[in-house]
Image (cartoon, rainbow, N blue to C red; front, top):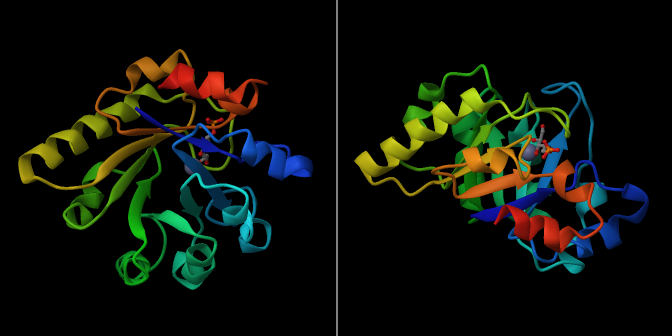
Length: 207
Ligand code: DX5
Ligand code: ZN
């Protein structure tokens, strides 16, 4: 089980130390929010532009923004390994093509109330599917177990059609809820990890 730590609830007065404390995580999950697609504003290129100089941990960028097409260059330039957009955003196909044109891996995510079958046309090409297990916008929310039906669907579709995407879940993942993560390749965890002093121990507890 790979772990991607979300820095949404990090102490931004000490961001460098926070990032360095996550050296055992498989990915650093960057929750970019525009205050329009979700009712919260987080951070953008200005904050993240030097993150690649202080960590070797690959960056898993999650764009919770309405017009991701206009910002792809920003998140390519910070060194994202994955750039994930939402199926509910604008210009999905063109944006996925644009991400691919920069040789960055593509991810597609969906809100809890969005039907997983909306992703069907994209599954053969996509590198990652991010199933939200909370309503996007904030860290520290409770795990929505019914969303795991989408993981089962994705797992079956990948097996049946020999697709290549990895399956990631995002929101409310902690020592208790990790047991529901069957069929999942990467879990995103934010507050559970950042609320603990020993981050390496917290990350290992999920692996
Ligand atoms: C929510 C974000 C999640 C969230 C995870 O919109 O996409 O990545 O920050 O944080 P926790 O683990 O605290 O739910
Ligand atoms: Zn996220």
